[in-house]
Image (tube, rainbow, N blue to C red):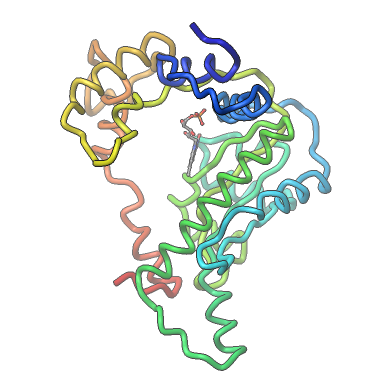
Length: 279
Ligand SMILES: Cc1cc2nc3c(=O)[nH]c(=O)nc-3n(C[C@H](O)[C@H](O)[C@H](O)COP(=O)(O)O)c2cc1C
C-alpha cells in the first residue's frame, strides 16, 4: 500500500512499491515525490512567460554539473517570432514548437574551449570523438536541469530532439557556428492539463545490483507491455501501411517499429561538417 506521494508516484511508474527507506524524512520524500511524478507537457495555457522567468530558469539550470568544469552547453532563448516559426516549420508534426509560450534550444558547444586554447596560446590536442561526446553529454545534463527547474517552478515542458532531424536548417535559423550543435529544444509553459505519469520499464530491467544482467529481458518486456497497456494504451499503431495492424500492440512493438525505419542517418555527416572529428 502506498504510504505517501512518493510511494504513489513510484507505484504508478513501476507498478509496485519499493522497500521502505527509513533514513529519509517526510520533507525529503516530498521533494523526491515531485521528481518521481514528473511528466512531459505538450499543451499549454494561454498565459505568457515573462522574459525574466525564462532567464531565471536558464540561470538556475546552469547549476548543472559539467564535465571537467568545461561548461560546454549553451541555451538559445528563441524569442523572435519569425525564428520560432522557422523552427516550427521544420517539424510540422510537433505543433507545440510553435504554440508553447516559450521555446529554448540547448546546444553542445565544442567551440569555446578551442577558442580559449587559441586565446591562451595552447594547442587543442583532443580533436576526437570524446570532444563531441563530452559536449553532447553536458547538453543532455543541462536539458535535464532545465526540465527540473521548469517543473519546480510549476511549469510544464517537453524536450524536442526531433529538431535534429533538420540539424543543418536548425543551425542556420539559430546562427550556430561550427562546433556548436543542437541537442534538443524545450517547449515551456503553464500546463493546460494535469497530464499523467508514464510507466517506466521494471526496476529489475534497468537497475542492476553489482553486475549487468539482462537474462530475463523477454519476459520482463512482455510484462511491461501488459502493465503499460493497462494504463496507457497506444491510440494508434505506427506505420500500419508498412507493418499492418496487430492485436497486441504495446510499447515494445511501438519502439521496434520506430527503429525499424532509418532516422537521422545524416547526423554524423552534419556533426563532421560542423568541425568535429568523430574518430
Ligand atoms: C532528449 C529528449 C528528446 C525528446 N524529444 C522529443 C520530441 O522531439 N518530441 C516529443 O514530443 N517528445 C520528446 N521527448 C519527450 C519524450 O517523448 C518523453 O520524455 C517520453 O515519452 C516519456 O514521457 P514523460 O516525459 O512524460 O515521462 C524527448 C525527451 C528527451 C529526454
